[in-house]
Image 1 (cartoon, rainbow, N blue to C red):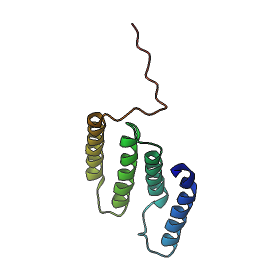
Image 2 (image 1 turned 30 degrees about the vertical axis):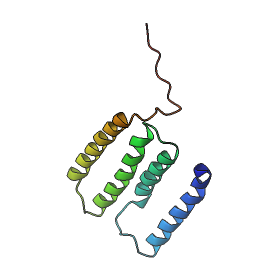
Image 3 (image 1 turned 120 degrees about the vertical axis):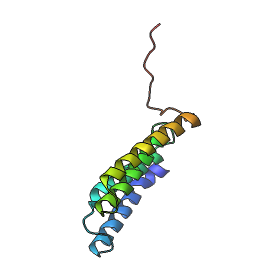
Length: 114
């Protein structure tokens, strides 16, 4: 059901962002296309299913969108953004291992040699 709603919701979000930028409600100097692609990709990964892959990639893309926006608004430096991303990646990888999330359905483990 969520997959069927993705395109209409995507159009609403893109249109709303475009309108807010046109009316001057969004700060200048931010590459909203880049931020939007990161955020929508993160949401798309998360709604595709909850597994080891999506539990790491989805939040990382969303965090990247937020941090990229803050950096482009000069509220965060690259020297701070990158360590935050590294810490988040390590934390998510640890979470995935502790939570014993399933592998993605599309993943097939390599054959083991005997």
